[in-house]
Amino acid sequence: MKAFQVVAACDIQIQKAENYARRNSHGQKWGVYDDFRQMLDKEKLDGVMIETPTHPRAWIAIQVMQAGPDVYIEKPCA
Image (cartoon, rainbow, N blue to C red):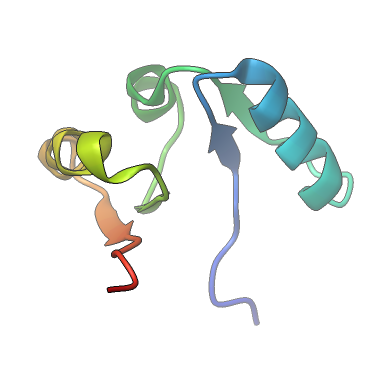
């Protein structure tokens, strides 16, 4: 039994999201987005991992939490 299943990838540089999905999807069909809000609208997500630079992280996390999925946030190392 898997603990989770990835269904989508998002990056403001769409090619990075496409490359990530191609390397990690193991042949499964993932949604690929350059706007996380579109991903939230189109995918049925139970949770979202946010791995961004510090300055947009809180705003994105708030938007995702308001949409309903659980949120896992990368925190700074220090």
